[in-house]
Length: 180
Image (cartoon, rainbow, N blue to C red; front, side):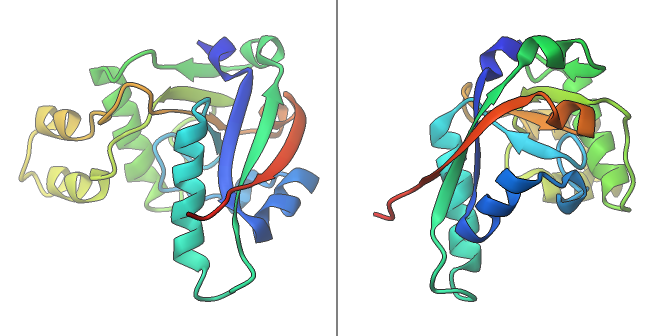
């Protein structure tokens, strides 16, 4: 599965892009994410563009000079595959349990796993209210799993969770996204 991420994309904003290219700080990312704190990429350019545009719209009021950007990366997936990692080909019960635990423990600032990388489907954006309902026992785990199923088959993510995984990035280039 990692070979699908040979060329990957990270959606961000101009203020962060140069900092990321100079030095990826995995501790700068949020802990309350699908696969825990890390540097997230996708092999889907459209998905990365959506991430960049969302971040742009979240921050544009604070800085009128911002613009959405995509960082294009080339990964050494053979080197990465020699590290410890998890790969979820599809949104299985095992994947849903992993996402649940990463989110549950990450909410308190902790890490659920010690993997160098994790790749798999992107959970649907309704995960936060579903997580709250599951924790308050208003829904079953099966309902949670069904609710976080990706809304499209092309939504995927690779989380680089350690410095060893970050060192598998061979090349980065920043591209500006035109705002329509």
